[in-house]
Figure (cartoon, rainbow, N blue to C red):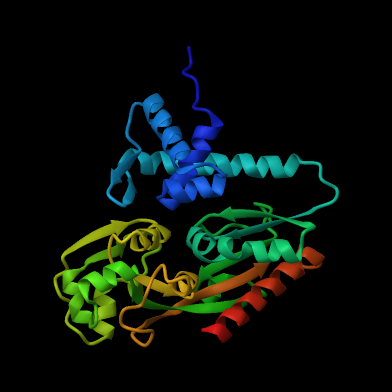
Length: 306
């Protein structure tokens, strides 16, 4: 007899907790308490017979089993949301499918999206966060925000912004370690990106080389295969990350992160940038034009503020 699948609520709670690496933030997203999310995850772990998280002081990390299960659950929930959106009968709302990378969605787009929904209440945005380059026609994508070289962006792509990289850390860690010069990072845990695609400029050796400072031996290192989890770990006080500007601008403004050496000590990602691409089949739709215009206005506003 087939074993029963876990309940949908348990899977949604686990997926949110794994994405945020925080029971508190997952609860806020799902309108539940921190303890309710914790109980959901515990119940799921009991059903599966494995630990999905490592619970540490002021930190939450996925186990190897948790990482594998998170990828599968996230993909399944995305498919369910997509199927639901495709069959929902809502004549009063236009559905706009937007695709982008997991990092851009988590750190930049999702925190801003309420502004578009407020300005365009009649448009229902379906967000597809996926790191692979998607075919707009085959996968029914209306708009894609792609992080890539200009040659890959696609015909008619519009550049939103490039990237610069600088060290970022939680204020309390910066104060505790007295981070005043790059050499002081010898006292810190460095958070490293070990994901795909390989991004050479997003590595500590390259940053130190660009700063013309010998790289010291750090107090420790932590590696992550998802960039947005590096930033979550930095906010949680687990170490120093190389922050991608402007993706981390909102966290810097909110003082959840600080740039201990100032904004002048940056390296640039010369070969890649963020481009918005509109499917020709959607180019004439008012909601698609409104979304592209909103993206450009937010970028211009952030640039002026910065």
